[in-house]
View 1 (cartoon, one colour):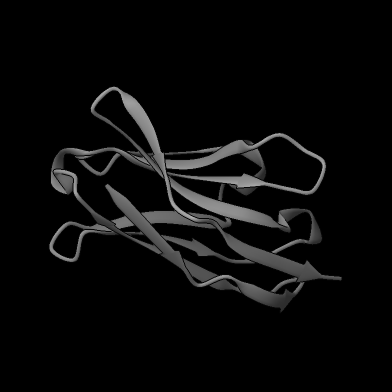
View 2 (cartoon, rainbow, N blue to C red; view 1 turned 180 degrees about the vertical axis):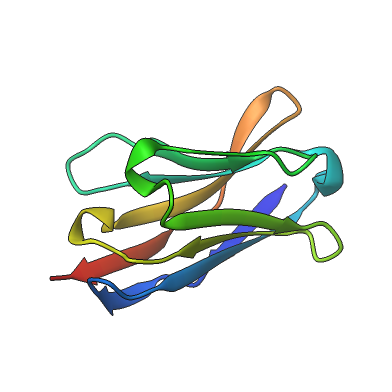
Length: 114
């Protein structure tokens, strides 16, 4: 299983950024996919999840600003982040639960300057 994340970078507050994660080695179309993030000195937290049927869930702090989506043909899950805030600064990880364990991408750094 491989999860290859991309799209991080340095942006100013209020700007947008799109993260992508390409999956291999899993039955992507039936797998729920998630994005987590870990800010410096903090625990990793779940940001958003999309189920195989396309249902989505978000943590309160990103509701209305972030959108998770999936493209089964491309085996890709994306996180569109808008109205970014400095507190969104973190390493973002793609995640799936497959064959009784969690799988993680390598992480992509998002830095939001004020």
